[in-house]
Amino acid sequence: MQNWTTKNNTLYQKFKFKNFIDAWAFMSKVALLAEKANHHPEWKNIYNTVEIWLTTHDESNTITEKDETLAKAIDGLG
Image 1 (cartoon, rainbow, N blue to C red):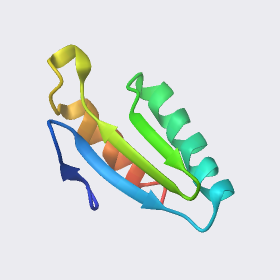
Image 2: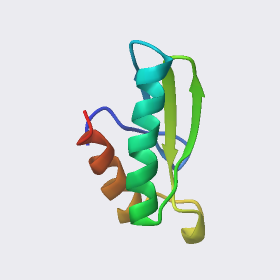
Image 3: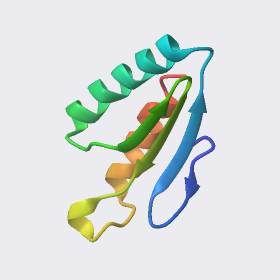
C-alpha cells in the first residue's frame, strides 16, 4: 500500500488534487470501489484535498483485510 499510515486503529491517507473537480472525480471512483466491496470509508473533502480513514467497525474498529484490500484498490486508481 502506498503512503497509507496507521493512525488510531485506521489506515489513513491524504490525497491532493489540482482542483475540486479532480478531487470529486476521485471520490466518485472510490465510492464505486467501496460499494462493490461493501466496505465504506470515513472521509473528508475540502476543495482539492481528500482525507480517507479505513477501519472495520464491525470488528471493534480495527484494521482488517477489508481495509487493506480497499486501500490497495484505491492505490490502483492513481
